[in-house]
Length: 380
Image 1 (tube, rainbow, N blue to C red):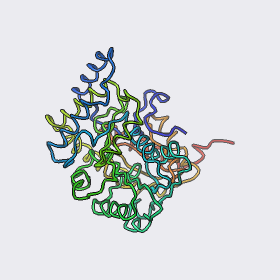
Image 2: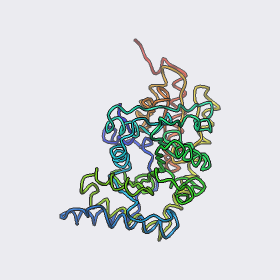
Image 3: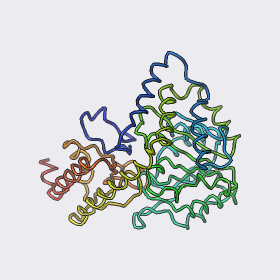
Image 4: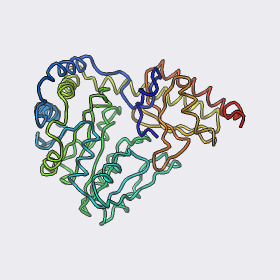
């Protein structure tokens, strides 16, 4: 099975609800900067991504985002995924603690980079809307070397209260474990200031910590590949950099990243995006909730980011929902390969109003057909 959303290459012409990208698209200034980067690509990219790192660190310093951090506390990667892989390579943890379901790349990176790594799962319950609760604290034991948490979580979209994140970090501190806080979707969350731990670095006072950020989602640039990590532990950052190839980020991506920082500073693209996404997410959730009230086999879960998780419980027809929607030009993300979910689970991105309305109508027609198996299954 294709492990990610965004497979438009095998599904030409479909409206892509499978990739969690800002529906406002890439800002024009970022596109222009990327084009300039193409023209400059007769040269090698800047080693160590110095200009890009300075732009990110400078913005954070200006806005008191990462108190006391400087360029040596940042590492940039070819997408957030490269940061995860370099972190696993540098850290080499033997036992890791992960929620399930969550983003697959943590486990993938650890099993690829760390021989004989053991992964312990904390399974989230749909009966609790997939929320992490305080009982997780008792499971961070002395044999755990790394805890990874995605906030908001992918694919559930659920936020973890900052107070609980800080308690988890305190639990890690007690046992000497590292903590990875993946905030790749945080900039898309309205009211994110109440959830991010970026401004808590000084008060946390624990250097076995890495915060992960991404340009991909907010600036709709997954094809350019750009993410970064921040840690108070400069030795870790240097070790991660040492594991990366010298020119790991292309010139178009470096130029686009610098322009993206300017878009936030000068035009508040992030604030505008959060407002629009929040409005469309509420609309889409309410419309999907109406489907839930109509069809017993359908259930949607409320999220805080730019995507929603839903379940179709009518087996075996549920496995064909994505296929039937694709026939109508709607590309969904099947979540059947997420540990803790399985067949019948799907994730949809939040897009603009016209696309969202079209998706709801397509789902309505498909769910109606699912109640009439003969229309789908056909003759044996």
